[in-house]
Amino acid sequence: MISRLLVANRGEIACRVFRTCRDLGVSTVAVYSDADAGALHVREADAAVRLPGAAPSETYLRGDLIVKAALAAGADAVHPGYGFLSENADFARAVIDAGLVWIGPPPAAIEAMASKTRAKELLGIEPLDPARVTESDLPVLVKAAAGGGGRGMRIVRELPDLEGELESASAEAASAFGDGEVFVEPYVEDGRHVEVQLLCDAHGTVWALGTRDCSLQRRHQKVIEEAPAPGLPATLEASLLDTAVRAAKAVGYVGAGTVEFLVADGRAHFLEMNTRLQVEHPVTEEVYGVDLVALQLAVAEGAKLPPETPAPRGHAIEARLYAEDPARGWAPQTGALRLFDVPGGVRLDTGYASGDAIGVHYDPMIAKLTVHAPTRDGAVRKLARALERTRIHGPVTNRDLLVASLRHPEYATADRLDTGFYDRNLPALTTAPGGGELAAVAAALAAASARRGRFGGGWRNLRSQDETRTYGGTGGDHEVRYRPTRDGGYEVTAPEGVRVVAAAPDRVSLETAGVVRHFDVTAYEDGTVHVGGHRLTARPRFTDPREQTAPGSLLAPMPGTVVRVADGLAVGDAVTAGQPLLWLEAMKMEHRVTAPASGTLTALHAAPGRQVEVGALLAVVQTEERPEAQS
Image 1 (cartoon, rainbow, N blue to C red):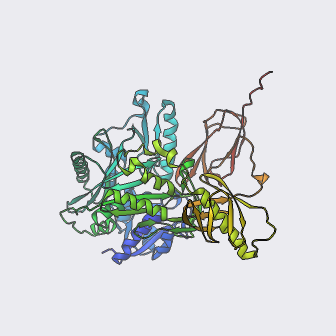
Image 2 (tube, one colour):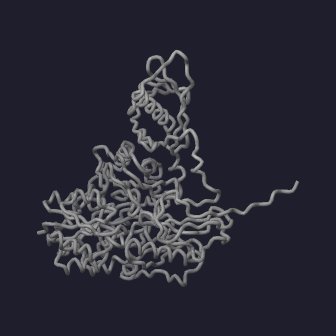
């Protein structure tokens, strides 16, 4: 029997495994990097062991250090979570050789399936030879052989881009998974991403726990997942389940695993088998009424699964809440998560709590919110409303995008579920939500009430000029003008048509067109104001001249590390618009920084290994000046 378990991972998955361990009476051990010293998974564990350093390659990818940590803490089992070393056969062997229980499939099964190239070979599917790719093969997908989560993946539509994308994908895969192997395969445009959840014991029983649809993705990383996959023909669904079971039996699989497919034109194309627990496993748990982590532990202890797979019930949907700005190329965000509060009736899987900091070293996912309902329509409505009511104070997130995605007709009706959803709809989905103007009014009046409470003051016989405050938000800047009234309240003069019902530093009630709306307001010292679901920034009256930058300046769009500079790039070089100049790594993803226009590189402040903060000056491109027309 397992009595003490170490989770060789961090954040949300570590907290999720610990939750099951508490229910089972199993004590827990966390490992942590220096960047995670105060993280939630460390606080929730019964014991924790430091892995010196911050980068994944120094810490969570060091299997030798993790095995030593397990032995030092007296653990008798290791759960790998997902990502990092979860599909590393050498790590699995090291755990077993140390006399510890490995919560996962046999190393031989990992070797057979964890590498996408070897998995395809096992099923008779040959990848493309990069040296022989021609124009007729395009588009193609460059893909990391190990790992997942969209890292080490590139779409190539122009043949001259292939070599550079192979190099970039390999570098990103090596950083994220410790394995830089990549391969090339045909890219199927706008297919559905459908997968099958498996659970197998060591006695030959294989459960196929239905399907999941994970088609809503950005950068090949899933955003919204659901179970069961809606609208699949019965024959196709049966074929997916059968293929998944045959793949598991072919390699003697034991434990939890997932077989992934791309469905297009009524056909299923095998993608890979993930020999681990998936991020989206909660939707399967909700539909089948099981705890997959508890079953993983039971199987590892030698238990037999019942011969019959549990019966499904209802529908479940999960949304991944990321610290990122979808309107700015999905740029990851960092900073203090000042408040994080999710309404009741929602399953929350997270590695963060109010007051925690979101750093630059790891994936920007804050949490997963999952709901279950008798029908898909009910689950869509329930999750969209829960996200609206979730209070998130801190970095910009994708919360508004998630709500808009769930309510978009293509998704809400399941008429068009495919991986091209965001390519088609992102501009409309990132349009600023309504209500920003009223939120700015509430912010201004809350600030006025707070000042009045501190300093006194109010209406005077000699009428003063209007007070003016400006707030910036996702919908642009909003100017608010108001004045105090004789009765101690306020009169709003701009925007028009707003009557103040009540105003306090933390709550404002406004009436427009006969409807009264209430706004909860929280202001922070840095000028950020959260009004309901709106994140606003108080604008200063005068622009600080120090904030001005020279034309052509390339500023870091996010905090991160410069990992590469274009070969041979030097000050004085001529560059063309869109030319890649350097690459930043932030939150385990590479981000390409390109020339904003054609011109001359007049400054280059970036160097590999340099840590930069958001807004740091990386380079300057002086644009080519056109001669004035002769009169």
